Image 1 (cartoon, rainbow, N blue to C red):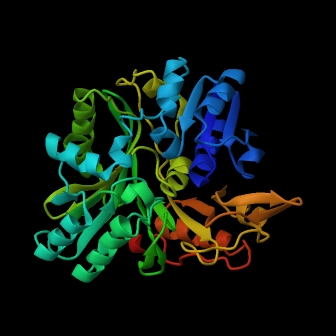
Image 2 (cartoon, helix red, strand yellow; image 1 turned 30 degrees about the horizontal axis):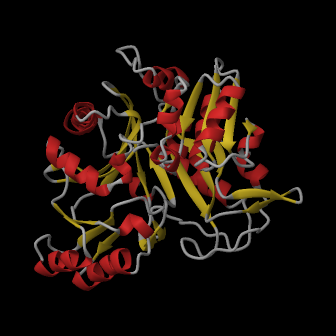
Amino acid sequence: MRVLVVGSGGREHALAAKLGSERAVSYICCAPGNPGMEKIAAVERIDISDTDALLALALRERIDLTVVGPELPLERGLVDRFGEAQCRVFGPTRAASQLECSKVFAKEFMARHGIPTARYRVCTTAEQAFAVVSSGELGVPVVVKADGLAAGKGVVVAANRDEAIDAVRAAMVDHRFGAAGSRVVLEECLVGPEASFFAICDGRRAVPLTSAQDHKRIFDGDRGPNTGGMGAFAPSPLVDGAMQARVMREIVDPVLNGMRAEGAPYSGFLYVGLMLTCDGPRVIEFNVRFGDPEAQVVMPLIASDLHPVLDAAARGALDESSAVSMKPQVSVGVVLASAGYPGEIRVGQPITGLDEANAEPGVMVFHAGTAMKDNQLVTAGGRVLTVVASGTDYAQARDRAYAAAARVRFEGMQYRHDIGLKTL
């Protein structure tokens, strides 16, 4: 099988590493890729929003299966375009991608189909949002969400009404997120531990994968602003067999049934962001692709071949034999970020120590914001690398991950020191 992975981050590096290691995968290509992927795959520098160029690549390279990593090409209709050309692709259509690409659509969809989530109000003007916040009907803290994609920065958990007013003003008056903030969703703030659950879907049927927990805030102790994710561990100790069955029954299956009934069958990775409340699991959000950095900690744990399951899902052919088996291990991933992230950063800093980090037992280092300059690996983004380690328990995996992270050097490097600590 010849496989194309679309994307350039740590998630796509992890997907390419897993798929490329499988015996039946004879060729793997990544677009636009990154320097880490160049060691395991052919890399084509193509803009992920250029669906025609990606399709031309798939046709030229006789690709059997394309796996889409990030949400942007899904929102742009890459799956629809490939479908028109009868090229097999794993991911949701543009219509189905609304589950992530529009917070308003997702909340109203859940309301229509009885999927458990927080109470909410949709606001189309700043004045309307200010009135809802001032009324206190959703309580405090209150969550303010920009409707559209905002690079992981469109959600604010406001501790009080003033913070909520500021968040609304940033989205709807100052247009900090552009068109993504033309509408906002205001939600009650659910209470409980968070976990992420992943399933592989083919439009009618879903195969459970596993769970994870990530760390969004920039600083130890969950302090500071939200980021795209500073680390993760898998699986989540909070999601046992009974909880997995409940999430499949109360959330994943109703999503598939509802999307099919509304004429937009859902195929691809389904990422369910969960709040495990005293009343049961509640949906915080959906993502229509694998998480990052969750993919980096999940992929090394998969024992069976992944490509047959993704291929079957892309064909709408999952059945009782479609299953993913996991290793009896856990993993912890630590994101190494540039100074200033998630704000203004400086790129072009030389990176050293990767060979030593990768030599640590059970460790894999996945690239994200890296580039080559004058034959030197340098930083090229906010989240630069994810150092992932597997082990028999979380303590061992944490020790290995942090030992490997300590081997890496670049000016201004920052990372959290408490990733996975809650498991202990």
